[in-house]
Amino acid sequence: MNDTKKILMSVAMFIIAMHGAGAQSVDELSDINAQIRQARDRIETVRLHRTKFIKKKLERNPDYRYVVERSAEINKLRLENERLIERACDIVRRKNRPQTVLVVKSPMVFMLYSSKYTEVGLLHSSYQFNRRQIELYERRLEKINGLEQRVKNHYDSIMHAEIDRHQLMIDSLLTRKMQLVK
Image (cartoon, rainbow, N blue to C red; front, side):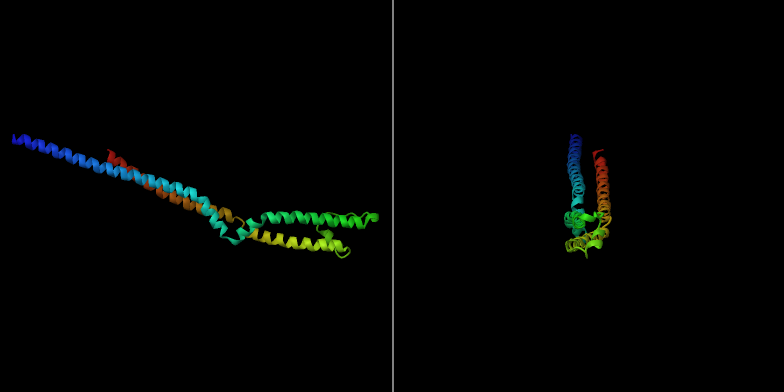
């Protein structure tokens, strides 16, 4: 009888030990699953924030900000300059009506007729002011040539490195999970 009690006690102890080990492995599996979810959430966060980081970096560059903020204004100045040239040509044609002067629509009209006709000279002043604004814009545009792509490439490499790091962590956690399940 004593042996039977010992056997039953041994079986009970084995069952309790197995149940305790099972609870421990269930807790560990739950912890691993939580870590995997967390790593996947971090990967998604990195992907979602890429655009925001790129935008922030570009907005910190004064030349980039200047170009973005003034592009519509510069387009209007270009159109205005075309209209100024056209008006200057019309004035020259109108003033030389009997002689029928051939006037080409180009900034050259200002060079040729500004001193001769006051109205053309006034248009020339406006044209010059607009041209200087456009040139300033174009110089700053040249400074940022390729900046946007370089910033995107930089943040893409950071994002991919971060994703790779989290993927390796997930792979490691999955390997550990497989070992526990076996």
